[in-house]
Image (cartoon, helix red, strand yellow):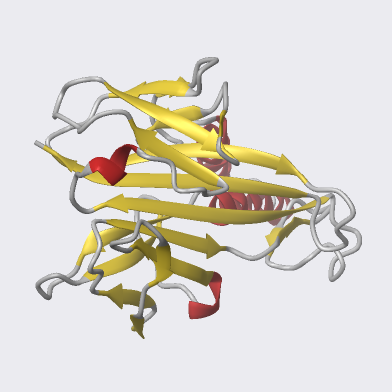
Length: 252
């Protein structure tokens, strides 16, 4: 379990205990503010995007969320691309219905880019979806960006780099319960020390000096999560960026 969630659980337990003890409303309010701030941080950073089969044959839906999925504004969905027969990434047409994007890709490999806006931490500890320019007293402002890569069918392209800013590449076809090497790239280069696991709340492995981390798939649908951090300079709206990546595939 991450330190972030431990803090949230700790605040929740304190709140419940204090409420039973009949402490002052002011103290309860302070605890509630702390809990709200931590939850706000979780909403901003802990979510991911990925592709799931929809109800119609051949149709998929872009999901956004963490333990539970949520709807999202279409404006935050920056691109959906698929690999064409010439090995080039091209935009995929989609329909936006009830707060989610639906598509019928004609490709075995789909990439999703999602920008969750800018979130600022106020001196009170509260997180708000505003830029540092809009909240100049903010302690810091972060831009949470999400990337998803869906391997819908295994082929030679599943094991290649596709010139993405960030990419997770399995080194062989996934098999259930067999350790799988995952190559992690940033701007086409292997990255050491990146967390790779099922989610940020689960145990993870770190990439080695060659950018490789081990992941053991389960039978059926798998999600492989990784997280990156960027420090931003000369930007009036935010000073850091968090990048979460979700690779999905089926394993038999």
